[in-house]
Length: 275
Image (cartoon, rainbow, N blue to C red):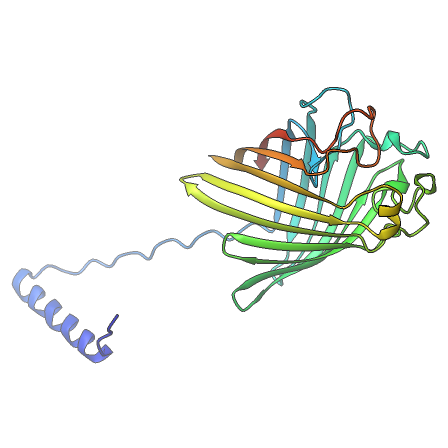
């Protein structure tokens, strides 16, 4: 594309405006500037009702109902102008009661914080996240993560820094030595693209790499996946649906029925309200 010198543009504009004024003698009415976009609120809330809670492809409800295992979820986030952020997210669960130690919790509480910044064309995100299960401390897990985004694509790697990974390496009855969960890695690759007004298609692929001690105790590395879409209803309300599952059709750690797989494909429908 070619650009004309500024002087020529200004001279032409002045000449044309002078001619128009001489011909019409109509006063020029100033135009008010467009209103600026409102700044994003630093404090936001969200609440969701999900037909099933799948974490890294696996059911977090071990009840006998096959697919419909509703979960109530919600959280709060605060974003600082500097790029730092903190947040909390919570969900009902039903799996810790099958820990060999007998500890039990009906809720998952996530606490996290990090820093988002630009690195050239990339949107970077670095932080830490702790999963807390009140009453079932042996399942508590802490990870640090590094994420990068470019347009509709994103990648995130999480590494376990706690000695246990959701009970593995922390609950000694599982056959994995103390600290055997530390160093477990999780890589997630995702894409989200608006394909129609208010409709966003989403897909992700995740890889869980456990420590050798966990593999030797019978806990395999595995891959999880999610394919779906979301629809923005308006006023902070959205609905989404996704097919979620994992490739290992065996049970993960704890289950109420050893004949069923918590990795099975499941259609997860969610209604979310953001405030």
